[in-house]
Image (cartoon, rainbow, N blue to C red; front, side, top):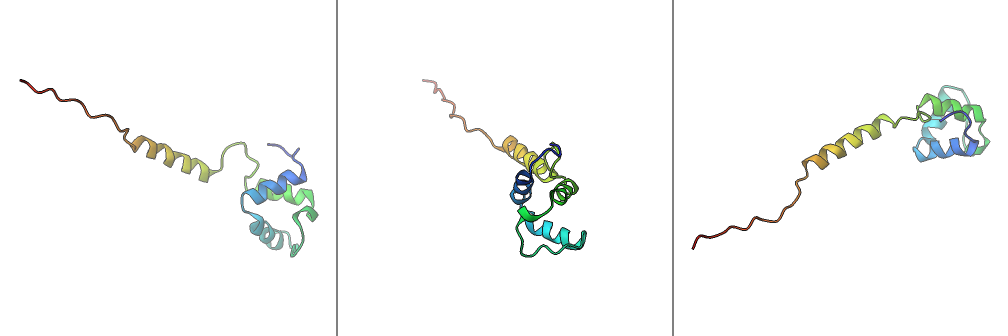
Length: 93
């Protein structure tokens, strides 16, 4: 992804990743801006972009957590045994 994202797309990325509270804390602690209680749509575009970049939200690669989850799912799927029909046993007569 590049910086050609719209303001709404950046807001969607931040909210989708449940980082609104972290963003507000970042504004307060790092930038010295009090953002309570305003809308994210009122925040400067460059601040939204800077936060998203600093948190790795704009990387084309999947976040580290998702990579780990996918590995765990793959390992689980490898461990799942497929059920098969029992073999017929022929009796000698």
